[in-house]
Amino acid sequence: MSLTAIGRLIRKGALLTWDSFWMVWLAEIFWLLLCLPVVTIPLAFTGLHFSMTAVARGDTTTWRTFFRGIRQYWQAGLRWSAANALVIFVLGFYTWFFSAQGNAAGQVSLNALLGAVAAWLLLAWLALNFTTFPLMLMQIKPGYFQALRNSVALFLKWPGGSLVFALLNLVIIVLSLWLRFPWLLFGASLPALMSALLAADRVEALTAGAPPPPTQKTEA
Image (cartoon, rainbow, N blue to C red; front, side, top):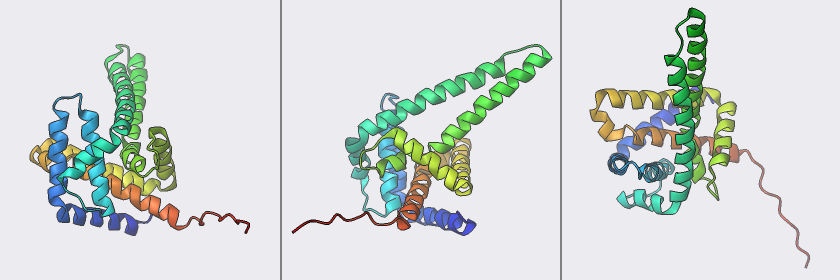
């Protein structure tokens, strides 16, 4: 993935954010409200990713788009959320556990190393999962593990572009948490939009060069 293509996608994301500002903002507000009860967090991410993927595709969107996504893909959202919650909890626990252990110098070094490995695995998992939900929405039958496999394949085929977008999303999230006010505007919706743009663009690049499916001859 060339720097020109990366720049084109980032510019497209900025233009879409401007042109669809109200949808991006409304998706953020709906996401925040649904995250407050905690138990509805999977539904919040489902509606967020569905609406931002629709914006990335250029589909017509309204405030109902967010809730239509929840109705259609709530089961996929539950699977996605459960898998991520489990992995993030395990890796986060080991990061904390190894960082808090050890007194001897050698033991501190080993625990620090193990804690760093767990932290890097956690960051890698988060980077891969930026595109899993958009890829899941592009499947005929949304499946999390297939989307994760496709996300890994996308990362291995275009590591440069995938890393740039992962870092861009992390920067947006960190700045939103730090500055507080932007969090209410696009702290979650903008990373979801950029991830959907990347996934849609790479899927289009793959399918554009794929040969058409063979046709079967029928006897008269």
